[in-house]
Image (tube, rainbow, N blue to C red; front, side, top):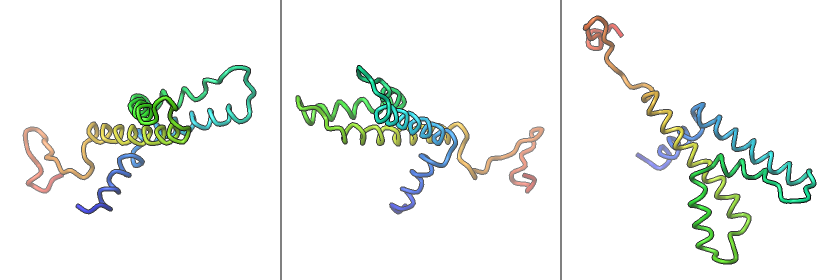
Length: 127
C-alpha cells in the first residue's frame, strides 16, 4: 500500500464519519469561544475559557503537555507548542473515534452471508 492511499485512509477516518466531525466541530467551537473571550472580553482575573478545549482534547493532550514541560524545563512550554498540541490531540482523538465508529458499524462494502430461515443466500445470488 502506498503512502498516498494510507494518508487518504487516515483522513477518511478523521474526517469521513459523523462522530469525528461532531467531535472536531465541538473542539473548534471551544477554541473559538476561548479566542473570542480572550480578544473581546475584559477580565479582572484569568479566564478559564480555554479549559473547555483542553478538556475536549483530553486525555491525549496531557502527555503532550508533559513532554513539552520535560523538553523546555523550568522555562515552560512556549505558547505555540501548547496550541500545536491541542490541534494534534484533537486529530488523534478524531482518528480514534473514527476507528471506534468503523469497528462498531463494520467495514463498508464487506460482503456478509445473508441468512434467512437457515438458508444461506450468499452462494445463490439472492442477496
